[in-house]
Length: 201
Image 1: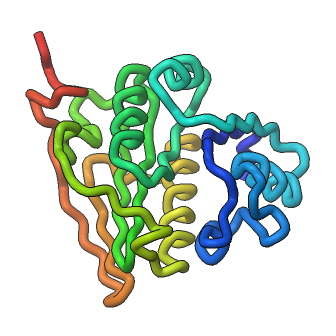
Image 2 (image 1 turned 90 degrees about the vertical axis):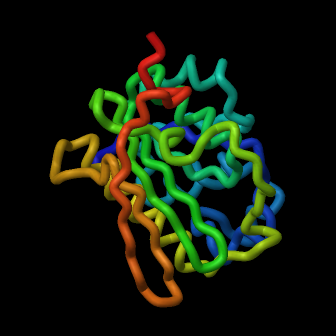
């Protein structure tokens, strides 16, 4: 699509349980760093794309270093704490964020655009201080095509944000139940007292 530079951050290695849903990986690359597997998959399609592969967990220091050079961020992580770290960093640096998550037969998609002073961030919808038991695809399971569906939608939203084409889904939480092929969309507003993007003066 013309995106010439991609940075991938992941501290994990390819596991056999990833293969049915994470299409970048192959059986031959089980045990390899995920970032290197993704680099190989992208270069097999287009060797001219410049990929920075960082095998580490995202933290505030890393995000603060990388985000000033980013055009858009895609959050594909599977844990609540990292998702909030990424959201907060995008708000700090005013970089658009496309976040998606999938588990079992359900998925969510949200676009955060801190360049719009009226747009909500992820923390406006999901409070950072909320406590709940983490559930991961490797243990709880996920319907494999659902992951690819959400990844494609993330890519579409990212390209819209980059190119200015169309209207990204800013200010909406989109939810998909693949069992019923049912989409629902909830309009969300910016919280004045949001601990991340709210007015704290």
